[in-house]
Image (cartoon, rainbow, N blue to C red; front, side, top):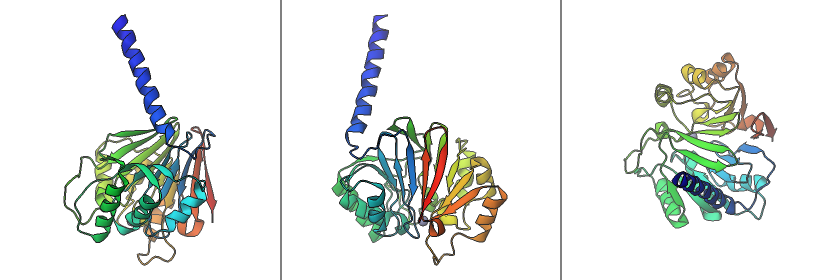
Length: 289
Ligand SMILES: [Zn+2]
């Protein structure tokens, strides 16, 4: 009996410590039992801000410029200068640029990104900002689960293995794909993955079923294949895209596919910020121009 009891106590202490560790650096918590996910309108690029019910905050990508700083000011209290976790899905300009400014202005505790080798000056600036920040670095590999506390988890779906030290200039298909979960509510975040990776993820056997899908690669024709939509079977899709962008995103074929699958979609160019609020049972979509 005795060793078993000891083990149990040990486990409880460990859990208390980890919960405590996370809750200490959340100054801006509005503890209302709600998960909030903001798909910020930052023009042609992605920036997604998550606040767990315990106040823990995660920013996934930063958009193409410093517009994200103003957007964060709208969803975070003015005195809050800490972000618990920043995730860079991949290092293209429309995802990484704003994050560099975020690292300069905010105290970031944890950074999740694939430490690849890429020649671009922008990526060099990101690496420099990461080094300066001194945050804990987490290498994203499928199967890892990040516990945000209060029942919210972020599971890494892709990449399948570590990309640390690998040289590559095209990184869309290496985007970090995440499943955010709070009770019954699930949100799949896909970065800029293309058809090839969508197929690979389906074949991996990962549980992709989600209520809300962040459409990959801004609704480009390279992505959002029917099999992927079938596997995820979302009720709602969100497209992060800039007004009159030069790529023609989102393409009509993708919009038609979403309609054919009966998926209601929102887009940041016409709807502005798209906010998802969940109590773990039900979710609500709110748009604010
Ligand atoms: Zn992009």
